[in-house]
Image (tube, one colour):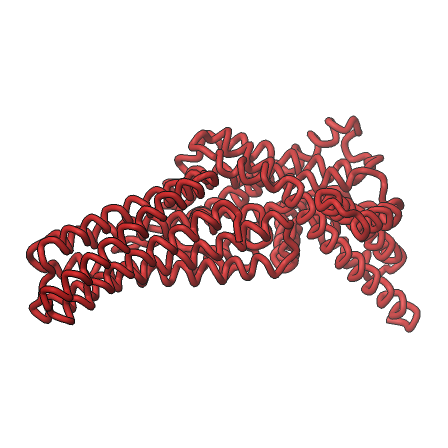
Length: 555
């Protein structure tokens, strides 16, 4: 290769790399901005997913159109299935829709505004930097993203143009022509490999459009590459499913099988599929397309829409296939957050909902601990199996709190809207308070065991007082946990009133006990255990009140 050719090649590499970087950054900004603006709507849409396959599919289309990445949507779905918030059938429906939603990016690129990418970016940047309204700022961020996408695509197109005059590259690219079944699959595998590396089908579609519009590759080659990109995009979800539970792995496998089978049948009918696209565009077979980007976008959308329509009636069959590929593990599994996969955090508006559901699970765990403790204290005979359940549940809640803290810390390390940041702060506090409640429940159990091992017992009146306090505090915690589950933020005033009543009973029981202790000369250890129990119940009440304050948005 001559010195001139080397210089041209270096210039191509710099322009394409720079353009791709700006394109990817633009996709990220567009996604984050649109999520921030439509965050509440996204949360409601995900929460409305049902077993109706058409509704789940529409949810997938909408969410992916907003997030602008089918990879992020499928990783999100894997996370939701892994945490027990979505069933396998719901997940498959959303994944089918995500494949249609991701084609929106290609249609955005069809717009002939590439040369306006830089002015759009510059104008939106002023609003992003100087606007006071958060909604305006995030709308500007999304617009900046659109500008960067077009500017990056323009840079890549300019970068690829010199390839047309380089015979060695023309000869190399000519080896990738889908004029035979083997040729089709060669292009498919290239598209698959590039997308698996870049982990963004939108970026590889953009690269394909840039190559096609500059005349480096033909239209049929571009379509075959796009087919491969549909397989390559499934790699992200497969990576996210590593270490996840069985249903999460099944969801990732369903995505891969769906896209792979779709590409196989399209590849078998490839010449007829090309003719169909040319007919829709009103172009004679084999003639040059007047608008290459529109043809590629149509090929991308057509494949995904037809494939989805074919698979919607076969969702149950697909679910059975992946269930055989990933059989249930013996002993069952406990759902958990997938905070270790940072790609889950690309959707903060939805990620914050996942952590909230984990807090609801913490509330349920505390409720079970209270039930177990009541059974132990009412029973005349020790029940070590139930006692072990209380200790085990407390350990589980410790792990859950740690997961929530790590998950939300990662979430807040990115660019998140103010409302998501505030919600995360309140959730961190609620998780900490529920963990503290579980600690005090264990403390009461330890005091009960200590008394039993010392062959001591409370007097009947004190037993009655402790059980009365257990009932009152248990109902108080259950009331606040119900408010957390239903997001009933107005519970705070009621919580304060009932909390004051519990504090009054604790003081009354303590004073009565001290008077009894002074006159009757009771066992000091028994007296200490009783007062410590009263203190634990009062502390549980205090922590539950803190949860109500966090729910109401105070402190």
